Image 1 (tube, rainbow, N blue to C red):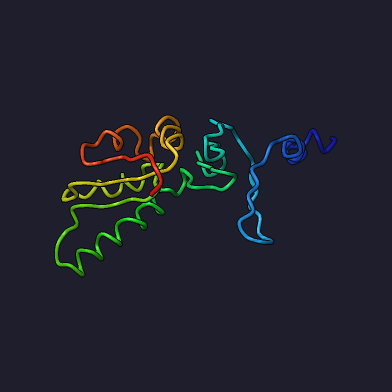
Image 2: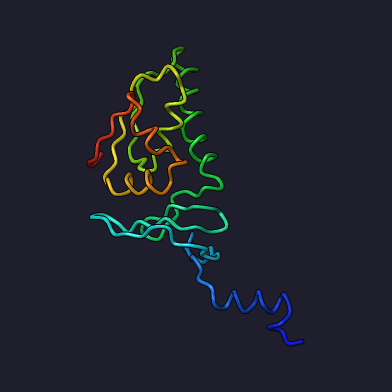
Length: 160
């Protein structure tokens, strides 16, 4: 039996033929994985926007850099938002009612802020409307239309 006929040989041949997503994380540190699917790709006025599927699930990539991935986006966005809001409560003695988000085109940061019932207003400013649109269409799990249409959210497209 040749290597190609064995299970390991088949996998080796597939790996040679497959596409990979490669990202330099730091000088000398490269993360490379199988690119399972390109779900969306476009160039906006400001950047290259890609939504790809890898071992980490759907992944938002801008200008070749991973922004978040389906596998763990919740841990990033939860830890970004909730400790800050709880710290505000602790130091001020009251719950926050207004929050500003600079960036956040994925809408996941706003999603986490809006989980707090005492939040009355969230102002989110993002430079690139295309990122917001791509995320609503291809990454609805991050927040999507539900967050964009929340009456407490004011979405401003512009430079923060």
